[in-house]
Image (cartoon, rainbow, N blue to C red; front, side, top):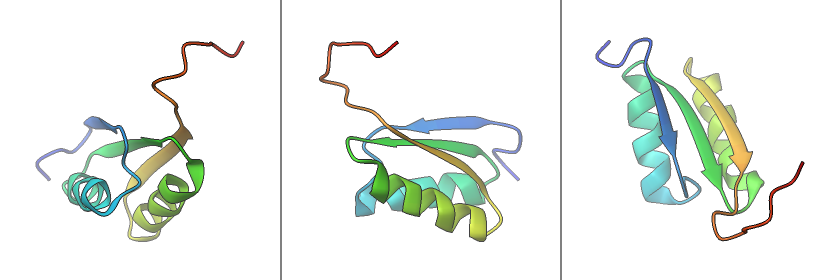
Length: 70
């Protein structure tokens, strides 16, 4: 696989374009880290990628929020 043992980080991956890119990268062997302003879309995508044999993790990230949670 072209991206075996590689990692990919996708921001705003909750939409159809981001989802298609994430699936293609995962299918090529990379572990994908998916983020979006809302967790549900990327968590569902991560679950689908994992169900198809890929590796994925999801996180809720608000890139415009300057506050850091500690």
